[in-house]
Every structure is written in structure tokens, then in C-alpha cells.
Image 1 (cartoon, rainbow, N blue to C red):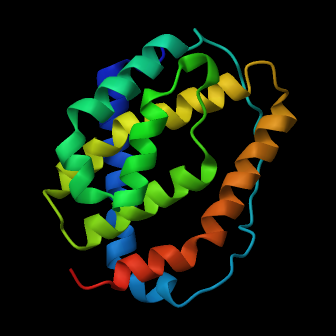
Image 2: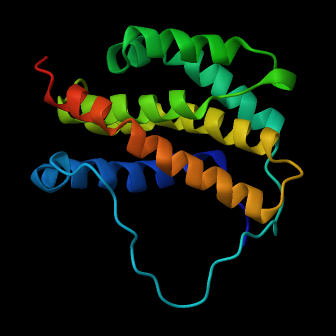
Length: 180
């Protein structure tokens, strides 16, 4: 199977993130009041990370992140808090060799997109699509930081990301309930 092209990733984000945000909206009474997470039962064989296929071009991903942030400037300004927007612009201007998209910033970004979706800041489909270049930035950062990492190290990083989402949930709830 061929790796997703740039167009495919847009459609994948539209479908997965769009459906996720719709579920958040639809089921807000269930998740707004919860303050902790529980392990989800799983079955079947453990998953394994695979490096099969053609590795994505980090240069191309970085360029799409950089140009996307620039081209979507007014849209991002309407979705993101001023500080978050400024930090993303600074990250986008950094040199690729030193590029890092902090987990804390990524989580705050996703939460601000979720709250903006809830408040219908702009057309919801356009809002979801505006997340694509930022996702590319997070992906590029992950690829650069884990170029030679083991599957276990990448799994540990994924767990750190999950914990960061849990840690910042009060921020999401605050933004969600904020009257615009």
C-alpha cells in the first residue's frame, strides 16, 4: 500500500478529527464532568510499530507546516488564543535542524481547535482542515526527535502525549465553557 499523499492526509484529518470533534460536541455531558481516565480493555495481539513503506520526507512535511501556518494566518488567529498563535508562528519560523513542536503546545492547540469547533468560530469543515498544517508540524517534530528511536521509546512518547492531554483537560473545559 502506498503512503498517504498530501491530499489523502487532508481527507484523513477531516474524517477522523471532524468525527472526533462531533462526538465531543454530541457527548459533552459524559466527558465534561470526568476528571480521570480509565484503561480501555483491549483484545487480540499487541500492535507493533512498523517502519515499512517509504519514510515521509521530513523536508516536505516541514515546508508544508511552514507554508500552511503562513497561508492560514488569519484563520489560525480566529481559532487560537493569542499566546498559542504567537508560539506556533515562532515554531514555524525556527530552523528545521533545531525544529521542535512541544507536546504542551500541541495539546493546547488541539484543545483550542476543539473549543472553537464547539463555539462554531467558523465553518466547522474549514476549521478541521486548518489543523492539517499544524498536525504536519507535530509529525515533523516527532520524526526528527525519534529518527533513531526504538518502538519502545516511541510508545513511551505516545504515553507522555496522552498524559499531557489529561493534564491540560481543565484548560479544555475552561475554553469549552467560555462564552464567546
